[in-house]
Figure (tube, rainbow, N blue to C red):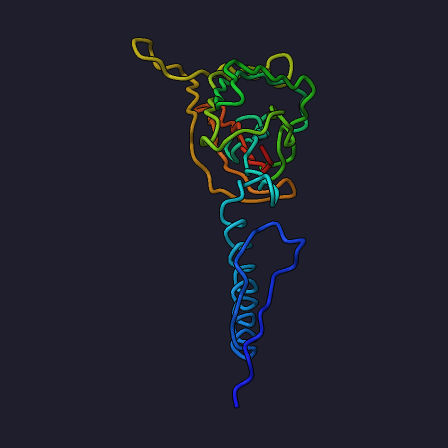
Length: 227
């Protein structure tokens, strides 16, 4: 004989008003199991939805954007056939030059002329040693978006080596339209192989004088940073 169906009511403290549930006990037991299964299954779905719609940088932390800033170093060398090596070894001298620099980005803008000078130079024994050791010329303080390398051009090189009758004057400039080519022409923008050293990856460019056979080498270092 089938047992009489039991009448079950929800907890009186429940907020929802529902009609009594009348069913066989086995049927009710299966129904409640199904309800529990639906509730449990909904939990991971809600978690995934929350993760999908959470704004970036709010619930799970913002990811910093990678930017860059630049450093420019300079060094001066002489070619093996430079006149200073044949006539003025170990002589004293000085050099100064002008560098036009343009480095523009959304966060940082710079345009101007840099005029470094080196007043106490000793001519080395040979071309294997520099006239001017690598020196920092310019460096950005502000991290900015990547907009390519700064535009840097050596426009003029002046100086002298030795004293008296053997003194060698250096006066090299760029070629300009409508002006006679200077005797000691300065040719900028000669691209050298990129490399790396203790400061990191660098891109190298050279300005070279025709007669005095001097090289002004520029190294541009891109330094990673966070915006």
